[in-house]
Amino acid sequence: MNLVASNFPSHWQWGLWLVAVLLGALIVRKASWRMLSDATNLNIFLAATVCVLGLWLIKTGIKPGLNFHLIGATALTLMFRPLFALFSLALLTAAISIWHGEYLAFAVNWLILGGVPVGVSWAIFRLVDRKLPNHLFIYIFVNAFFGAALAAVAVGLVSTGFVALAGSYTLNYLLAEYLPYFFLIAFSEAFITGMLITMMVIYKPEWVSTFDDKRYLAD
Image 1 (cartoon, rainbow, N blue to C red):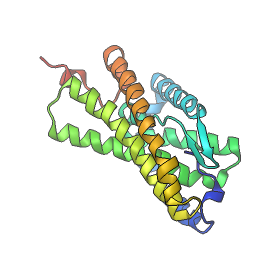
Image 2 (cartoon, rainbow, N blue to C red; image 1 turned 45 degrees about the vertical axis):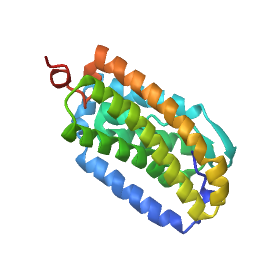
Image 3 (tube, helix red, strand yellow; image 1 turned 180 degrees about the horizontal axis):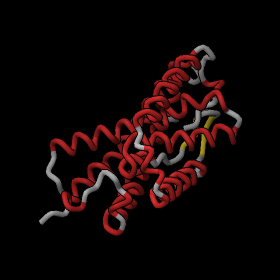
Image 4 (cartoon, rainbow, N blue to C red; image 1 turned 180 degrees about the vertical axis):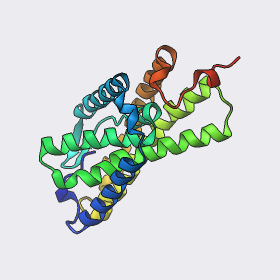
């Protein structure tokens, strides 16, 4: 989804932008920016961001503001942890907003396409990290496959609720013609994220900051 400014009341923008600014301030303050001072890390971060941008550009839609595309947030979260994942998604949202001239819609799109899936993905990772055994299959299947699918469904639910509350489209229309597509996206999101994370933890585990081969591959 890529909401347009006309999809929601103008007075909502103040609150949405306030939340976005506070989240941006948290990233600026808490993120370990020294990580990007290393050329290798910076190249990996930029390459991952560009790859996700490619996924975002492959989209379809049914109505203005009701577009569908893969998200990639779970892969970014597992690779870079939540703050840098949010930063990457902020760059993507800004690029798309500028491209389409929807500057005022940046905040809501970043919060829904960035904040929601990253929050869900990180919550699942933290829960699995605390409650389940350290096993490669659990890491890949639960964090990557299941986490990506649940994150995509969460985006669909939040965006459906937001658009319905904004009054742009009726809830009945959204439930019948919009939300079901996110379950299809969830399957694709799970498959692609799981495949990519599997390949990286096998061949380039240093690219996945939440993965520790000594921990998950211990005898």
